[in-house]
Image (cartoon, rainbow, N blue to C red; front, side, top):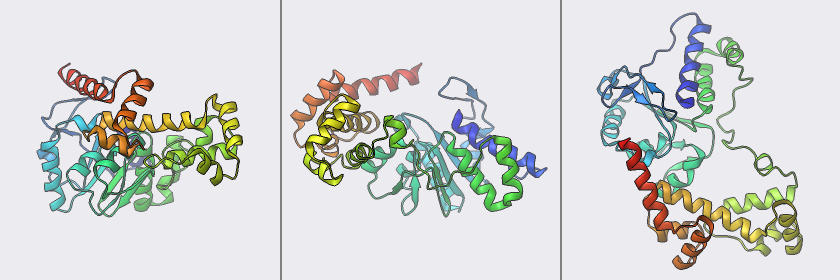
Length: 309
C-alpha cells in the first residue's frame, strides 16, 4: 500500500500544483477485480491488463513473495507493450517480473534491497544497482516504499522544473528529492548503532564478501588493526566474535535465497561461502532450528496457504 500511495499521491499533488490534470492513471488487474494489498485493504481496479493499450507507461507494483506469483499472463502483456515502445516500470519487487520476462536485459535497474541478492543470483547478466531508483531510457525501476515519491518527483522535475516541484515537495513534507543514486538502506552506522569507524568498515567488508568470505586476519589487515584488536571490538560492541558475526550475515543471506528462489541448496551454500553442503546444513540448522530443505518446504506451504485464504 505504501508503495502504491507514494507514487500515486505524488502525481495527484502534482496535478494540484499545476492547476490542471497533467497526470492520469488507471489501476489494472488480471481480472479487473480489486487487488488486496498486503495490509488487507482492497484496491479497486479500473480494468484488466487488456485495457493497457494506449498508455504512456505501464508500472508494476509488487511486494514480498513476488517470485511465487503466477505472472505468466502479465509477462506476456508486458512483452506486447514493450514491442509497441511503451515505457515499462516497476515499484518494490516488480522488477522481478520484468527481469523474468527478459525486459530488463541491457538496462540499468534496481529492486527493493531484500531482493537484490535474489535477482543477482537468478539473473546475473542484469546491470543491477542498490540505488533508490533507476531510469534508463524506457525502463523505470524503483525500490518501492517511499522511494516512489522520489522517482516521481524526479520525473515531474524533468517535465515541469522547480516551479512545480518545489511547492510539491512542501505539500508532501518531503524536504528534498533524494537522488536516484542514494542508497536504499540506512547507513551501517545507524543500522548497527555503533560509531566506531574500524568496526563499520569491517562489517561493510563482510557484507560485500559473502560468496568468498575473508578470514579474520584479512579483515583486520584491510582496516589496519590486529586480529586481537578486531576480536576485542566485536566482543565489546556485539558480544560475539567476528567469525560468529560474519557467519550470521552469510546465513541470513542464505535464508533469503532459500525463501525467494528455487535455486539448489548446493548453489545457495556456494553463494553464501559454504563449500561443504553438510557444513552449510549444520550451521543453518544451529542458527534457525531447521534444515535449509525444511525452510524451503515451509516457505512454499505458507505461500500456497496464503493464496488459498
